Image 1 (cartoon, rainbow, N blue to C red):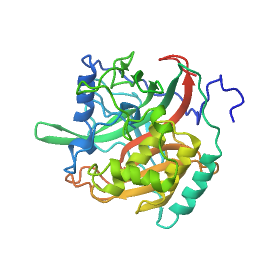
Image 2: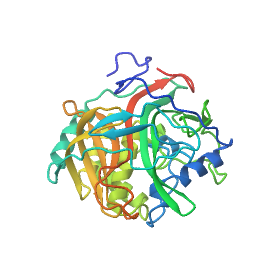
Image 3: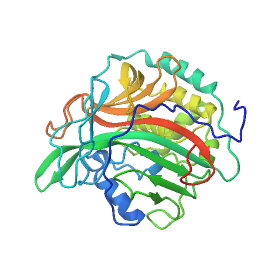
Image 4: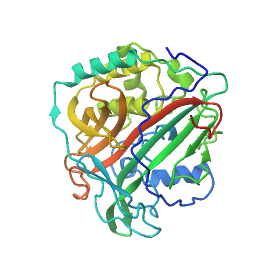
Length: 353
């Protein structure tokens, strides 16, 4: 257990050097416009003809894909993040190719259950997070990504710069804050108040709160049944959506050790889940991965773990097959990448450990 529950607990804080200078781009004020900008640039939401997915909690978004004014700042090549000399391009500049690329690890179709069992055991033995009344969940991550952008009748591949993303959320989800260069104003935006329909936000699997997570079943079979039931009709296929939902919970929230272990055991029961022998997160940390190939988009989503401790590091989605978009996105392109750097309880919004 944590020896001092009054002290914030951090997880997986590893720095990999300074981030490139990222130019801020002001967006019109208001949550509606913010979400509109995000949705306009989501390759999964606006490029594929699958069933529409519900709006996802900003706390769970692994990489907000930026408006057209934001362009190239980094590249993943051979598992290492490479940055351009300028760090970030200015307004009006355009990326002209799939600048985020990586080598692809080897798949073991039968190795995932054993690996997930080990990861589950490690998660169950982790210290449980402790908080005081009035504290907020703070999550700091590093993200980058690639998506398609269409201007007129010309479609090109553009990149989102590597950047730090910070979120604060109260346990009940009624108060929150987001700071993300290029996607919010420099001081960030509030996530409090009603949702886009004007109704009070109601937590669910796609937008959980700490209190909501505490009420989820920790029996893997019951948990997986709930995930399949509540995500029915979402995503491209039911199995891929279940895998995506679990991945969002692991990387974008802070489940208890018992729930985390149950999520891994539930994932082992999803058809098509495999082991990948090598993967690198957005912070450059190398590890082993649990993954699933989405045949409808030719993409493989990988959860990355420390090879020795089985600690969760982050997630990435890479193109491994045909992209069904005219061949613009080549195999080896990194669609999105995210590294969790810090998870802790803090005393106030904008406070850091």
